[in-house]
Amino acid sequence: MPYVAVSALSHPGLIRDHNEDSLVIGPWTLCATVTENPQTLFFPYASPVVVAVADGLGGHPGGDVASALVARRIAWLGPALSSEVAVRDVLNACNRAVYEAADGDDGRALTAMGTTVAGIVVQPGSLLTFNVGDSRVFAVTRDGLRQVSVDDSPPLEPGRRTTSLVTQCLGGSVTYRSIRPHVTAAPVSPGDRYLVCTDGLTDPLTTDVIDEVLREHDDGRAAFELWKAAIAAGGPDNITLAVVRVGDE
Image (cartoon, rainbow, N blue to C red; front, side, top):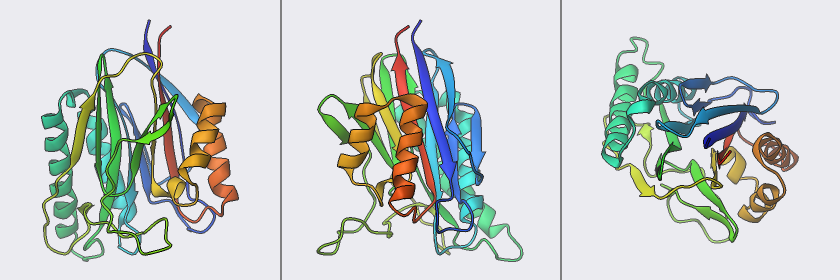
């Protein structure tokens, strides 16, 4: 019987003093906490399975609160995310919820809190990819790693490979700003693999390095080796990732 295997972990890295990332795997969430080892969960290849990461904005208050709020809402609504329209509606609702939570904080400690989000919804015959911000989704193909999310980042300065700036996110401003979520649909079949991750993985590691790890390893071992490579590269940010595989037995 076909199934969906998700191997994931979340770690603060070597520089940050706490983790502001959150993770969604089906109905489960891991919010602003740490996993010592990758966890692998299996789901029937039947109803929609959502896998997502949310990266609280650095330099803003309440990044962990914003990412957790978004992760929990997406997990709660996951079974209903069966179309591009439904995903866009949920992401817009998440954006409003972040602003409402910040406005409802009497101490104003959460003003301008925000988060990125990126993920996939796996359902029979169809894969929905979504993101707002610079967290990423990759398809792992025989021809190499292919990014299927769209970075909301300004043009890179000459000589730079990465930037910490984003052109849109959920929340992140003193006054309300609407978003334009990136949502696409594509066919999916047993054997397909995907990587969902925050920039704590993609900033220190090049695409070639990530591709090499995913060619050599699968599932929990792949997640562990990716984390280990990011740590070896300095672990400058929180690292959250999920390796997703559609199995056929």
